Image 1 (cartoon, helix red, strand yellow):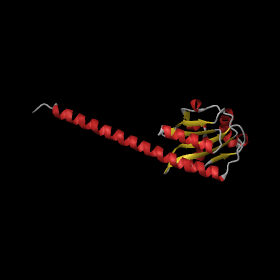
Image 2 (cartoon, one colour):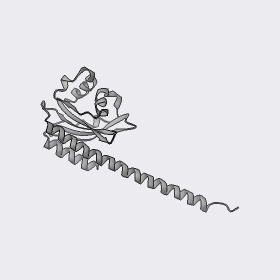
Image 3 (cartoon, one colour):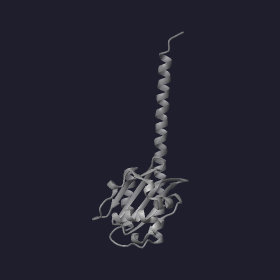
Length: 177
């Protein structure tokens, strides 16, 4: 799945003429987030290694948008509202000029978000850009949810097999009364 997501964000990043595309996933009861996948256009500095194990609480404005299933569409990062001052400083430190981010949801569960960055120039996001990223986010959400469900099935099966082995061992080693 990781390889497929990586390939897909590369294709969609190139297709959409952005400088960076990425996926962030939430973990630990949505208290932390990690940049799990990233594609960068030639000459754009990757940020993925700096964006792991981040407390969700450090981006209150951003996460409020994500939790309300809102897209974040910013033409000029430097013009973000005062209530997003923390997020503005983080984005400016990464040289981001414009960005488009959409939440990754499966039902009512926020899994993370996916985004496009423009570093070299201001980008005016079209309705088609928003539609494309939302459609892609829906596909990624389904794939992640499916992979997690399969993993849970495997873990449940392994736990059941281990319990059965323990039961048989106890039964076989019982002292006859």
